[in-house]
Image (cartoon, rainbow, N blue to C red; front, side, top):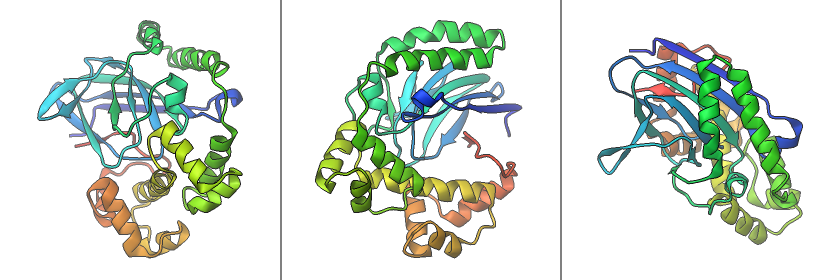
Length: 276
C-alpha cells in the first residue's frame, strides 16, 4: 500500500554553507495505522535527521531500536530499512560526507546510522512547535541559522574543499590521482585526510557519488539503456555498472528500473523513501 500522503520539499543552503551542505529538506508522509518499513538507498551524502511523530526505528540484531531525534545517516554501502507508522515528518540536513563529522565535532567512522549526543538536539522543541503551526520554511530557517553560527567556528580545509569540487563536477567518475591533483595534494595525504574526515576512502565516496547518478537516472527514466549509461558515467562497461549497482542495492539495475516504472514516480525527482 502506498502512503496516503507524501510531501517532499528541498531548500538551497545560503552561500556561506554551500561548501558543507548540499541542501536542507522536509518530508511529510502518512504511513497509515499499521507499522510499515521503508528503505533508504545509498547515495553520496550524509544526512542529519530530525523526526517528528510517533518516531522511527531501525533493526538492530533482530530487535527494533528506537532512534532519537536527531540522528545521523552516514555513507551507506547497502540499503537500510526504517520502521514507523502514522504520520512521520522529517527535517534534514544533507551534508557532504567529508565535512559532517567535523561539523558536529564527532569522531568519524563507517557506521551507517549514528546515534550521538550534541547541542544540536536542543533545536528539537522549537522545530516541533513550528511544524505544529505548519511553518515549515521557518523551521528550515531555524536550522540554517544554527549552522551559520557553528560554521564560523569551524576552519575550512581547502584540500577537502577542492577535492570535493572535483568529485562533484565529475559526479564521482574521476580517478583518485586526478582528485589529488585538483586538491594540490599527494594521493597519500588526501586519502589520510578523507579517512579522518569521513571514515571512508576517496574511492569509496567517489563510487557512491557515481552510483547515485545511476540510481537517479533509472528511477526517473526506467527505460534508460544500461550500456549507454555505463559509457556516459565512466564505467568500464555495462557489467561493471551492474556489479557496482548490485553491491549498493542488493538488486540488479534492471530489477530496480522495473520497480521504478511500477511506482510511477514523476520523472523530475527521486523519492526519498521507498516503501517496502
